[in-house]
Length: 234
Image (tube, rainbow, N blue to C red):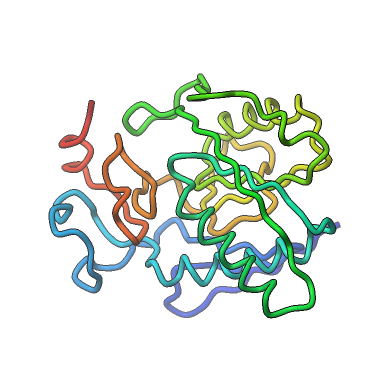
């Protein structure tokens, strides 16, 4: 049995839900921060509505997720499977924090990073199909403790399909780290073991998350505007 404790902070955009792994939950009515408070590529000024999660907050949260991973994995070596392209910044920062924590403790978790590239979006809509770009042979996962690192989990279709594919290669164990998980009524099961932020159903970009390959160069996670969707629509 898992007991949840929800705590609201005065004026805070988040609820903190404490369970076996703390979850930072962003409220449905969180308007984000005014763009004037942050720096970002000026050519995106009309293309984003707000700064939804600032870069510094992202980094602090990833450091905490790294601690959870260090505490949970019993093996001294893990295979990190980074889901490209959107997950590359999250994966790089998460692995770096794991290394830093290992150097300052009596336990070092050795990480080997491999990559898989998926495509399941057209414009701002998740499609039914999972497309693995490049080699789909993940035989190097056999018998290994695996951490799948994904930037965002929304409908769960892509992650379910990926985990099913991964399991065919008989890893020792598999856990999933998702920086963002969307709060959807259609999500019937939890697919992530480590969650950075649970967010409402908003289409967000930045921190390597894209809209048709644009916005990956934003450091912050931002909400795309209608203007941005129309400008970069294919």
